[in-house]
Amino acid sequence: MTLFQLLMLGASAFFAYKIYEHIQTLKDSESNGHMGAQDERSAEAFSPFDASSLLEKADEAMEKGDLQKALAIYSEANIKEPKNPQTLFKMGYTLAQQNRDDEALEYYKEALELDANNTYIHQAMASLYRKMGEYASARNHLNKSLEIDATNPITYYNYGNLLVDMKHFDEAKAMYEKAIELNPDFDEAKEELAKIGSGEIL
Image (tube, rainbow, N blue to C red):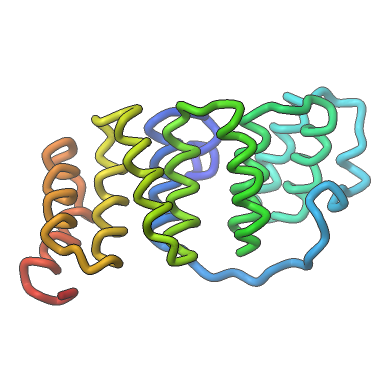
């Protein structure tokens, strides 16, 4: 099972891991144009399939790295079944993978309005705000994520990364330690904690 397939399991630890991976790496990728998501529909997206089947097809396209096709099919699913927070989240995620952050944020916000207690949407929004340098907003969403679920080590790890960016190293250390407490095999958190201990990132 690929990481993308794990993501698409929904609100689960696997879903959180994919978001953690995205937040950790924040790899740059080339933008594939500036058309609106609703306009980026391939001929295949206009189909007799129901929204659920379209989501599966879009997920497959994402797994293959075809972001434009995935976005087109997600958009069609959104037309057939509007106001589905899962679809909106996936559209936002796909846009974020193309560095179309402002558009991604709008879809995340819409998804959050429909599913206000979804910790994974909060994490994704924190990821974008961190990338944009809007640290206060990122912190607000991570705090909300912890209010919803205080047992997810990924949240503490991501919070630690944010606090490192903010130069709050003592707080970051505490977050990494909490992540390791919850998951003793969390090697990435151990590595970041060691960097603080050695003064590498101070």
